[in-house]
Image 1 (cartoon, helix red, strand yellow):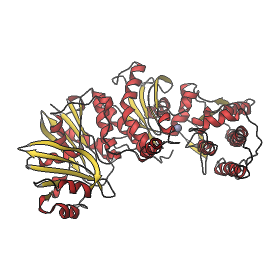
Image 2: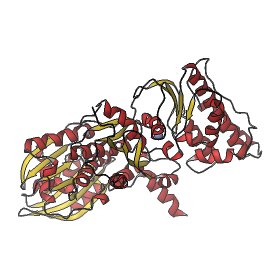
Image 3: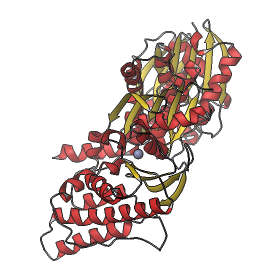
Image 4: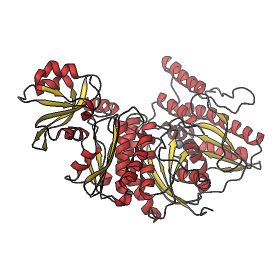
Length: 231
Length: 336
Ligand SMILES: [Zn+2]
């Protein structure tokens, strides 16, 4: 299988191509730049590196969120349109799961998270055993403090992995102490190749139905619902 | 030489319509699909940008597919993909721009970025050929501009609004009258029943200027309503609508007429969402009846936002081979 994978869910951008199920080219950039400008040239670059053209693809993988709304829409629109245009299956995968997959060979619990502002995070919980990762808790949008208190009930080490920043490091240490292992260096960056490998095992989504998973309602809609449910 | 009958697939997502169309040779509309979000934004009393962006991504491949199907063509037949690159809501524009680039890249076709206002002007070319030099009045929720054109693809803005766009003033006055969103058509409808009794101001600005200003008028209407309500006097909604509309249209028609005469144009194109207004159409007709200027107003379905107009404007750029590169971005404040 030749797979194109795209992640622009947060500040880092990662694109990858698998050729016959093997990683042929991957580009990950972690600077504050505009994904809308960067993405297609990056895709073009890895196609050239892999010596493939869009017509050679068999599958497209994309991270569906959570993450930055705008970032998600850039990656998802690109993946969705290419899949439709080339009549290819497309698999959408949680951007948190993609990040957790970096730790597929560390037995234990993995907690990926992204900053969601005002002390909140987009997060989830996964468990790794002998190279197999399973989901323990669905992705959610919650306050980091109360989430960490829930994690205190786990008896094992929890690996925390986040590409966005380290502003929660102190809070994690305060709540979980030695139980927490905060992943450092570039191990915490998303890799589109992980997305591609995960996608090989998943069911595709019908292309027209594909949309980002924001895990948060638009404020205007939330307000409208609140006002109209009171009546 | 490029084929004169080139086929362009065009995409427009600058505000609250997800649209795609196939246009042949810049003049012939083969399909024109518009998925409107009007009813979705109605409950919020205006367009909510994040809501609009979320809907665009759900609709985008559906409308592109429908545009190809209705035109009875495939991507193999398409010569270029065109898209509105600005101005507009950034999150909304981004969906169209990234879809256009992905589609074009997948099929090895060029991409053409189009200015939304150029699209509104070129909507007319799907009905009637341009006669240069021409003047265009573009009036919509976001724009009130007089644009002079000596030839295809050459735009000179000679007048623009210094504050509110005409359509914006309509929406704000409609809101003050507690009329449902969008307010423009509501005011036009009510204005058919009333009389110009309130004598609201008409702002012509300084002598010789082709610029517009509608915020003073809007404020005068809102103050008047406030004043009447405070005194407990009855408000004649129809008469307020007529009085407001007369003020807007007098200025639009007078300034446009003056510009058309000063520049000695052969054709006047009235374009944009507000050109759907019945009174504006009738008044322009009257004013230009005894002149040598040919008045052209596209039919209603081409006045509101659509992708066919983007395809028509893109045809000119296609023949100039004015293609965008893969780093084309949405530009919410794009200049003409
Ligand atoms: Zn418009």
